[in-house]
Length: 402
Ligand SMILES: *[C@@H]1O[C@H](CO)[C@@H](O)[C@H](O)[C@H]1NC(C)=O
Ligand SMILES: *[C@@H]1O[C@H](CO)[C@@H](O)[C@H](O)[C@H]1NC(C)=O
Image 1 (cartoon, protein in one colour):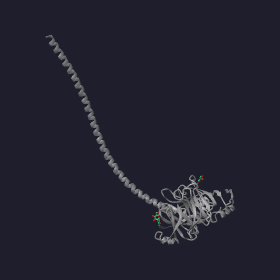
Image 2: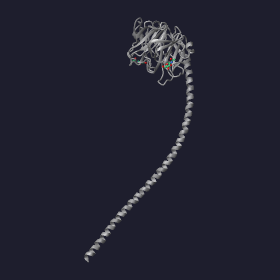
Image 3: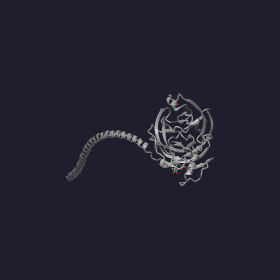
Image 4: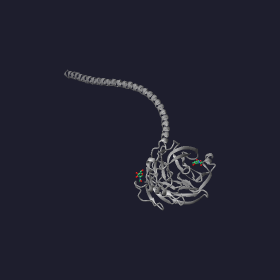
């Protein structure tokens, strides 16, 4: 009997122990479940809140977008208005510029190399007397005029490529057209009128040259064509070609160390020639490291270089340049073509002083000048602008000999 009792007691004890154990487990699980439920409720609340917030945000964005759209429309209208006003201001600027001529930067002549007959005095200080000026100007340049204004513009026609050049022989009045920036063909017209009437270049005499011209640096004077020929990188020469007999009469190497271009905005042009009664002028860059434009005076008969100057006019942003009465006028622009202006002036005789050099603005045009060729007889510039042939008529005034 006793063992049975013991077994019963021990079984009851075991059962009670197990019960406790399971009860504890149940409590624990229940608590965990409650906690999880709480958290789920929390998540649910949060999700709901996020959702609501998202909806609000969406509504807000839609409203802002509407507002932005309206403002954009208003902005567009304002911009159109501003464009009209800018156009008006530009026209007014044109007018004001034509009325008042501000000053361009003028650099004094700095003689670098002296050759042949040009034995000029060494010192040319500020205190020099009038007699010396007279003497100097009669030696290098006989004319005493500077540009005071651009009087009028004539757009003649549009022939050929965006870049090119046209030039009129001041002696023979014949006109020469160079299409593009390289070639061995040029077109000769008897007059500007003939060119103007011609459909394309059909009314012209087609001249084949024995070698290629490069860039827009050629010029024609007294029946001779002077052109820049660049066969190899280092071998740049000027060729003199007789337009009556169609033959080369002379050629000479140019004093270039590299093929650095003279005008930063027209990189095809390594050197630029311009001829007048004073002689033959050459604008060039002496080397890659030289930031300024150099000027040389050449003998048009022999192609000898007589004298060299550093104009101190930068090559950077230069578009073209021309020489009038021994004074170099450098035309500047920006890479995105805006308005061209003469912003640097250099007088080989040191006569033009800052106070009288005008800051000339060219009237609004199509693109950028590929070339500007001065004709001393007519006192006008032959410009090539985005394929258009344009004539600028200039007003001159006497240099102040003070
Ligand atoms: C000028 O050159 C361009 C490009 O080389 C050519 O398309 C055009 O026909 C030429 N125009 C004339 C008039 O020679
Ligand atoms: C180039 O010209 C500027 C003036 O415009 C001058 O200050 C500078 O020294 C010149 N540079 C050289 C290398 O001649």
